[in-house]
Length: 338
Ligand code: NAD
Ligand code: UD1
Picture 1: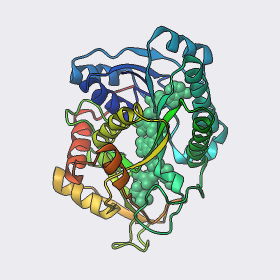
Picture 2 (picture 1 turned 30 degrees about the vertical axis):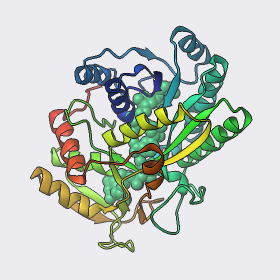
Picture 3 (picture 1 turned 180 degrees about the horizontal axis):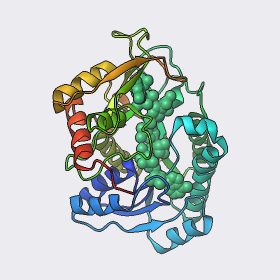
Picture 4 (picture 1 turned 135 degrees about the vertical axis):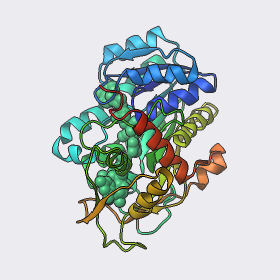
């Protein structure tokens, strides 16, 4: 296959390219570099020993997309490009709907025109809103999103379902990620958030490396075992392998397939802190603070469908996620130095 990877220089996209290349697929990375660096692909080349063709540009640029589909024999698309900061989406909703919804619309139109109908889309567990019970399977209701980021993912899911219903040539996988963490075991690529990290793991590693004083634990009074929020953390390499399985799966099928990508196991914030200290030998000072608006108490997946249909399970342990996140952060204290 020749796979167009939008958002290919980003955190998850770069790990997906490693798995695609290692499996013998051709790739073309497309990214406007608004939240990533070209350096990540040079690192991917070091890992795989193969060049990564790259086009710098915006997924909302129709003429660029038609050029890309004309000039390269793309057979499938992994669509990672998008904006993902929840808090920012509340402040700049138009930007989020433009990039995430309109951007996907432009991409789907270009695919349609080029006769490319295989698409893997980065969705999120956030589409489930505040589920009543755990674990979450794909039959659970979606909706009740509390911010424009989450709503944009839900809107794209609905749009792609309508597109597939209108034309049976489409084959689409909607992958609902739980909480991606960690980094490639080489320490060469990883998550490189700009500014103050919003997500737990990058914050923890920046505290451990001495860039930030202490972790604020958002809420110590949730109805969970130790009062802190529980999430299903998944190693980014397992997630990338899940994409590989999904793109191979949809090549032999039509319509929309929806998969949770998670481990099926939840850990609290304090469990993460304790495990990180154990694995790295570093202290992570923290303080319990008020809850963060929009957070739910707990969230973990039922990943049975992905196991059954894709033959995929998340294999890497929490210890491996934390050790790999730490290797990346300590070897690259300033990320890719954009
Ligand atoms: P990321 O920011 O590292 O990667 C996204 C990439 O898209 C970046 O390289 C950015 O430069 C690029 N991009 C943004 N707007 C673009 C545009 N208009 N045109 C071209 N490129 C553009 O984020 P990530 O963590 O790798 O996330 C990838 C996808 O997975 C996103 O769609 C995100 O919403 C989704 N997702 C991420 C998580 C997570 O925790 N990381 C969880 C669920 C879903
Ligand atoms: C967040 C987003 C979600 C997105 C996901 C992956 C919100 C409300 N949700 O999920 O839409 O798909 O990231 O990008 O932002 N925590 C702290 N201190 C911190 C950071 C986090 O205690 O400094 C806690 C949170 O309260 C939560 C857990 O750690 O209990 C995980 O938080 P985070 O990494 O931000 O992910 P989510 O909130 O699950």
